[in-house]
Length: 362
Ligand SMILES: C[S@@+](CC[C@H](N)C(=O)[O-])C[C@H]1O[C@@H](n2cnc3c(N)ncnc32)[C@H](O)[C@@H]1O
Image (cartoon, rainbow, N blue to C red; front, side, top):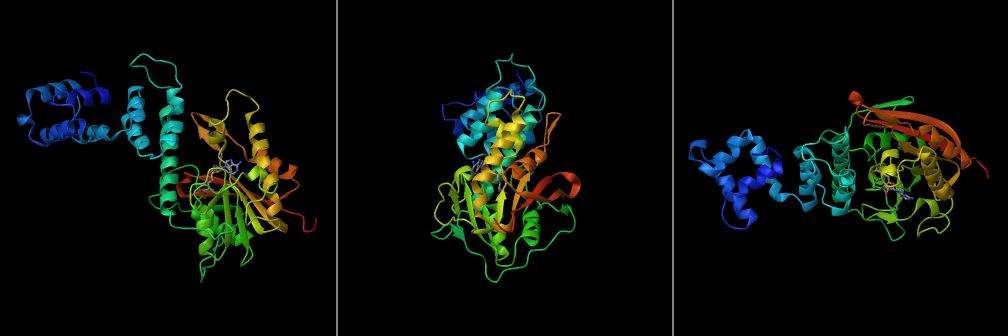
């Protein structure tokens, strides 16, 4: 008997009568909960040959019943079972398809061939990031902005706490999955403390699930959030590259004391572009540069813009995009006045924050 999880699952179900998968799973579960000596011969034959224990793997194995068809297909293509379980927790089928795309794109391989090095880790990391984003979007489903798209600040508001120096050390939220993209709330708080005057206003043009606005409102900061693919109800659909060319309701020249541009990390950006170009980092700089140039008009003279990135380390390679993004800021006429690296305890996360300041008069 094959030890591949899907084949084992199907063989176990085949020991049960009928066509109803859920009923057959219930039948197998009942059998496995009984003493081994009471198992029917057919079930024993499947498991004896499989060389697996009847503990976690078997109870986990039956969760294949809940797997979406694309996740079953991924299992068949050799995705490890634990990674497939994570991918199955992504609710949005389109996002799941994007996470699984590198596996689906592989040429046909003989059954037992191993996946290319680093692929299942990459899929697992993307799945965790997607789950984090979906979870935060769910938590924020009840937060709504005013008719002009601005989220009002909490009253009374706490004062944001600073972090000293240029290397900020912070504790990641306990229990937070190690997704790649959302900015840690403690880092947002320290940014607000350093760059926003009391009662100031913030515009986040790549808000995603709206992490930055959600933190900002606790500290008395009004905010407007936009994203090309919004993930929370208070985030307006807007393209940062054309924000000031056709400003949405609520957005006007000089409406913000701080502009946040937190583009997709280089790795995520590259997933959505054709690969194989050796000038990819330059193209990334141009893309992010267009977001900066297109939205910079919201910033009052003398105030700040922050561009946030992370180095990408994957499959034995590292991409450092920060200096390319600094060039993007300078090309937009902004002086780079600060560079902060925010590092999580244990070194699991590092965020690179480039701070630009607009001239005091234009
Ligand atoms: C790294 S995520 C932002 C995460 C967010 N700051 C947080 O902490 O939750 C990058 C976001 O940029 C958005 N994005 C990409 N291109 C964009 C564009 N041209 N205009 C606006 N948003 C864009 C993506 O949809 C994605 O939500």
